[in-house]
Image 1 (cartoon, one colour):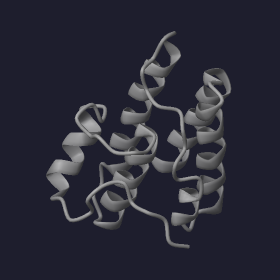
Image 2 (cartoon, helix red, strand yellow):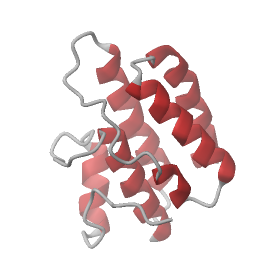
Image 3 (tube, rainbow, N blue to C red):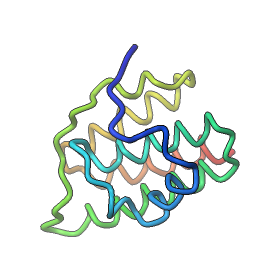
Image 4 (cartoon, helix red, strand yellow):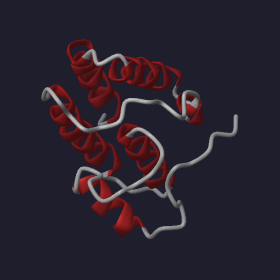
Length: 124
């Protein structure tokens, strides 16, 4: 399935890693910041970056903390509802889809548990 990629996949790995490390504060795209992190993770993983999973989880935790604060200015409109299909791991795809659903509906409690499951899946 073709999914529009909200990030420039021709960027050097160094720039992608920097974006994940900074919590995606400097990345402006018409997508959930979590979606941008997902696409960066997938590209870094494809390139064989050994820290991709840890950086991805760290970025998600940072975004999750920001979302847990009342009045967060992070967008919650999901413009890429099928991006979970970009990965072959069906379990991780299902976790990602469920996580984004929780984010869209502002359910940070259940999203927190899903985030732990995602962390376990991508860092093993």
